[in-house]
Image (tube, rainbow, N blue to C red; front, side, top):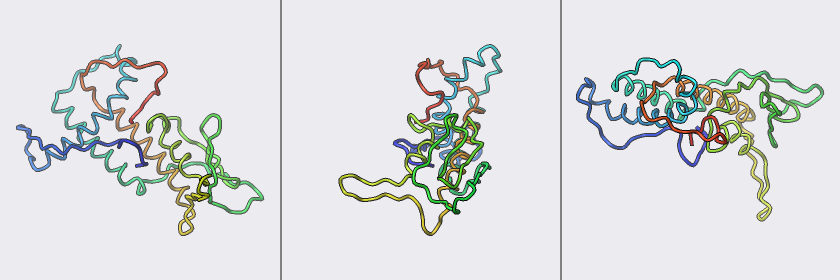
Length: 214
């Protein structure tokens, strides 16, 4: 997935033994995936448990929770490690009449309501789902991280220009935007579907982002 100070998926290097498991060879991997998913799950639960507190569901067993977290962790690892193989989210592409066909970026920017991305003078991408911004890297969403990092900039001291455009693959950044949206939406969906861990509810500051997977 896009670079962050801390990875959004967590792996475990410690071996584990589960007496009730019949596939001992895969237990270590399952524990790693389960730990990764449960770490991702906690911020989501802090935001959603208040809404669900009036309709308590039966508490699943520890083994059910373990397997659910393991499956979720494996899927999260798959889409984040192989983000460039994920399908592009189907955004609406609007080309400006009279402008030359161009897929280079200088500096992308979001519309005020964040549903559209002005890719360049030639192209605007519309139909960005609000849940895209629920997956966050630190204090900003993954999409906003891409917008910030993938721009042409010149270092004032050295005069060196950083240009993220690829001459051998002009549509790379365009694809990346769609793929990051797909990964963000899938991450929110997976983590939001995890069963509760039965941990004490964490208080959430009113100024903190809805979901932070730092």
